Image 1 (cartoon, rainbow, N blue to C red):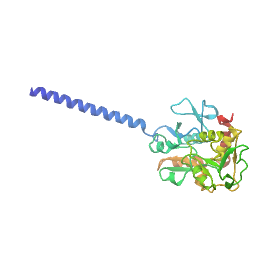
Image 2 (image 1 turned 30 degrees about the horizontal axis):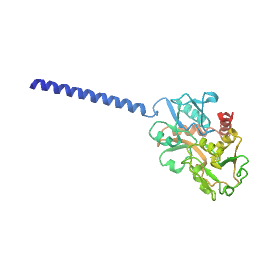
Image 3 (image 1 turned 120 degrees about the vertical axis):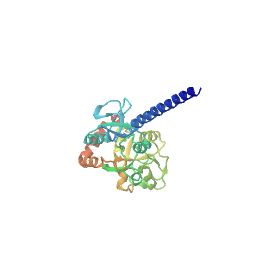
Image 4 (image 1 turned 60 degrees about the horizontal axis):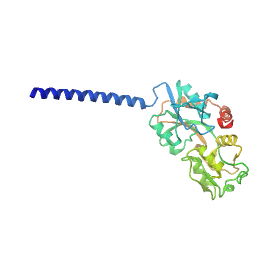
Amino acid sequence: MSKTLKILMTAVLALMVLAACGTAEEGSSTTSSTSNSKDSDVFKVGLEAGYAPFNWTQNDDSNGAVKIEGSQEYAGGYDVEIAKRVAEALGKELVIVKTEWEGLLPALQSGVIDAIIAGMSPTDERKEVIDFSENYYTSQFVIVTKTGGEYAEANTLADFAGAKITSQLNTTNYAVIDQIPDVKKEVAMESFSHMRVALESGVIDGYVAERPEAISASTANENFTYVELEEGFKTEEADTSVAIGLVKGDENIDVINETLTAISEEERQQIMDQAIANQPAAH
């Protein structure tokens, strides 16, 4: 009985060791599959693919659109064109990861993506948790409203007193609404497509956007126009600029900055104008 017991105990211990080894190997495999691509040959870029003309979703690869990871759809727009240039400079294949706005920072910090190229402004608050490249576009805030509506001929912020205005959640666009006297600041929305629907239906009187998005909206829908204010919002440069979001201490930042600074202001505007012309909703 004693020998039998020892044999059984030895067998159990052997099985436990084998099981532990198997678990360790499986854990190693999982870690590898979720790690970022810093040392690989791909450059994973996160964006909403829903913020034309900076980025949007389409059904094919026309006009240089890039396939979205894990999808049969493609992403196009100004951000995608910038992402292509950066990926080429890094010698990597561009991979687009469609990500909700609220999920972009967590995705970057967890290594799901390598960069945020999504029309994101390099605000001080964001700089506390991630790094930013040099700016790759600078715009201004305008207010999108109904063509022929009550606020279509507005010239100043005061002209929007009493108007129902909103913008995107957790953006400077939404914060500056407080500068409008007696404004009815509506609940922030998740995306600009939601805002367009709300404006069309009369739920809101207008929304704050960067000028390219406003041009995009009015190009896509003749019922929309936008107001460039004579006495507009008071903003910092970081509020109206967009830059590439990177993890703290990203070793590629110098190459990325060199790539961005090589694009002249004239060329940037040309790329933006082409993006506005190419957006699916414009046709």
